[in-house]
Image 1 (spheres, rainbow, N blue to C red):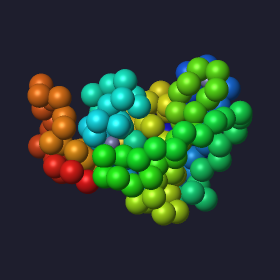
Image 2 (image 1 turned 90 degrees about the vertical axis):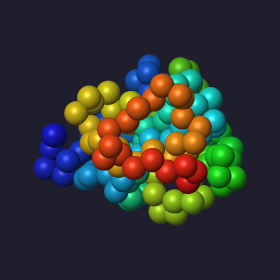
Image 3 (image 1 turned 120 degrees about the vertical axis):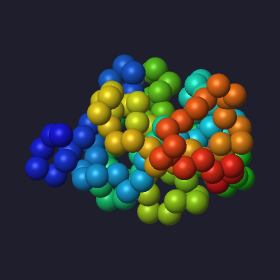
Image 4 (image 1 turned 90 degrees about the horizontal axis):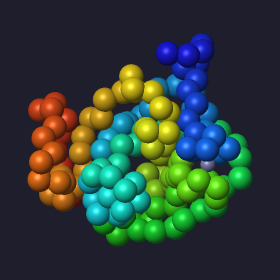
Length: 137
Ligand SMILES: [Zn+2]
Ligand SMILES: [Zn+2]
């Protein structure tokens, strides 16, 4: 819990691309679609959505445009040095910026409310009952 406006800082692995957020996220979710699995190298993505006016991105970055398993466009901003994506825009989420929660490096970050693409989650992944499992998106 930092600052009067609940300001938080996220960054890429090497620290040269940073994101500042003000206030609490609008939503926090997991997604185990296959694009998220490839994009993160992990079993699911863990992302927080903020209003775009609450987010400031600083540092050199490149964009990668793709489509999620839903078919909707997603554009990620990543650090050209270490390759970490620190923010994304999604066609299905107008006016929002997503920030991968791991980039905050804060284990007390808000719990996700739901898992998208639960139908594609790894077979061993059991989640707490209060995280909604949504088969697609
Ligand atoms: Zn970096
Ligand atoms: Zn996904």
